[in-house]
Amino acid sequence: MKRLISWSMKMFSKFLHPLIKLLTSLVKGVDFYRQVKLDFVARPDDIFLVTYPRSGTTWTQMILYQLSSNGNTDFTHISRIFPYFERSLMFNTITVADLDKLPSPRIFKSHLPYDYIPKGAGKYIYIARNGQDVAVSYYHFHRTHLGFKGDFDEFFNLFLKGKVLYRSWFAHINGWLVHKDSPNVLFLWYEDMLKDSEKYIRKIADFCEFQIEPEQWPEILKRTTFDFMKKHAKQFDPITERLLDDGLIQDAFFRQGKAGEGKQCLTAEQKILFQKNFDKYIDV
Image 1 (tube, rainbow, N blue to C red):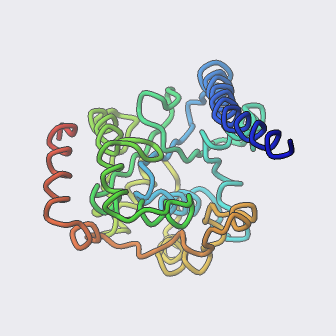
Image 2 (image 1 turned 180 degrees about the vertical axis):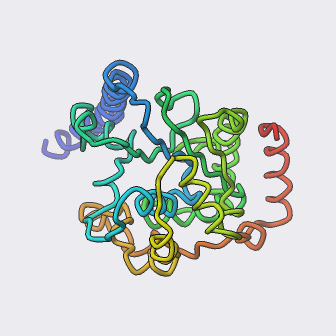
């Protein structure tokens, strides 16, 4: 009798779990849409830093923090200063009312596609990175932060099909690329920023209309180096204690901060598949 009851409860649980997951996802989606499209009011001096994940987001957050503040690294986590827009609202770690209380200029991090980002008179900085490098870095992120257990070949196929978090890199980047000449959009390539970081940090400052005194620049440039940021990795890494309890790996958010890794890791066949998708989706 106990075995029969146990089996019945097991079958019921198998039926119930996907349903609960679906309903939870639906509720979160509706609530998120309401907050973004109906409740959130954009300000003319808002700044949205947008990327596809693993494309220099955190580095550019630090650049914006250094340009817009005294640059002290005494904050607990960068998300407490510059909210991760969609994640904060989706998981109720912050409300639209909380966002309304933030002083101007508000600076938000986001990975949203162009069609989903709140529109307004504010400024939008989009950082694009070589898609092959993104695929490699995103694979490691999925393993260290999202519990992905497969190998790179399995992940790469999912990446090409847009079946990963934030979906298609090709559609994402193309959605912003077609707006790169808009006056309130600054479209930059991560690889260019690596080659001449000072030039592009100054370009970001000019675009955002930050007034930087000449004597501030040496400290800004020092604090936006990869080595400096890696020393303060815990202030940027999204892993929390709850995630650590799930067996995920701490101190793995910053990896190399270099360009060209995709060329080394992808096979010849994978490079051909990537290029076919690039030619299909990206209108340069």
